[in-house]
Length: 118
Length: 108
Image (cartoon, rainbow over all chains, first blue to last red):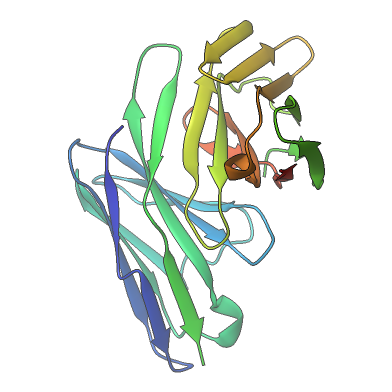
């Protein structure tokens, strides 16, 4: 399968600071990437859909001014958590969409970034 | 978010038995269905995907899809202790929503 990387794999920051997470598709071009958040013992919650060259589409309840998404190229999407607070501590996972056929698409996940806000 | 429902478990099966995991989804527009395995603290890894009604087999895994009933399942034959993990069902097309996951315990 295709490879998606994320950086950093973990980050600890102070409350009020901003944190940027990068998601890269290494061996294919991804016009669409997704950002998920996962709290302990919970499932993945889709935060937003990131489209290359256009504004991200946010899911209901996700603050777009707090979670800034930039998809500047076909292989890179970034998520910036602005003015992070302890409740933003979570496992952030990106995925890249690969168009596999007329009937289905496949998504490949990055390894995740664990954010801890003190 | 679109609803994808799974029994949270835990589902306990003895080694060598068949584990049956179930999932229902609410969005009839969903065309792609995925089963992922997730170990604690790790990112999900793809087990299988299915997009046509019926069964799809890959080794010890069989995915079953019934679009009329909005139901998708995963069967794991000859379950091994290493299969113990949380299994996530996802449904969608241009974007995907996940169920809450079913925790599977395979006892030696």
